[in-house]
Amino acid sequence: MITIYHNTRCKKSREGLEILENSGKEFQIREYLKEPLSEKELSDLLEKLSMTPIQLIRTKESIWKEKFQDKDLSDQELITVMAKYPKLIERPILENKNAAVIGRPTVNIENFLKRFSE
Image 1 (cartoon, rainbow, N blue to C red):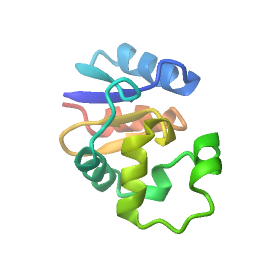
Image 2: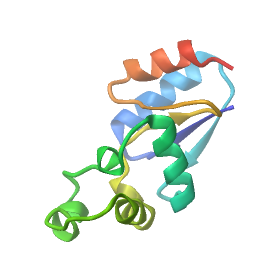
Image 3: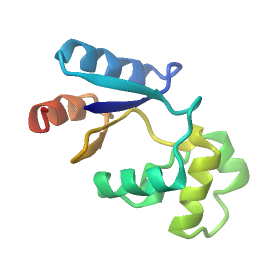
Image 4: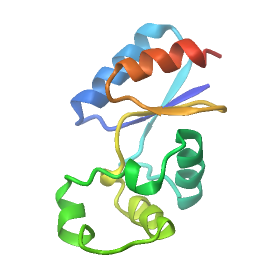
């Protein structure tokens, strides 16, 4: 089953959800601002994305600029920051049991659905 980590207020996330809805594939929505990811879930997701924590962080968000941009944080500390401030996580993200992708640009979602159909 595909999971979309979704922010209802984000245009790109809504576009990603629409692509997923139109795909006919089975999926579930996780509104990660209402149900934040644990540090373990973030670590697992980063592994599937083949990304470092800083690559998943929205560094233009005011929370990042005000609290963290001038700090030298370890990968684990960055994961802790994302768990505490989920708004910092890039979106949307699609995940299945084998892989994950950030849905920006939305063609990433289409390619993910083609490659990792269930």
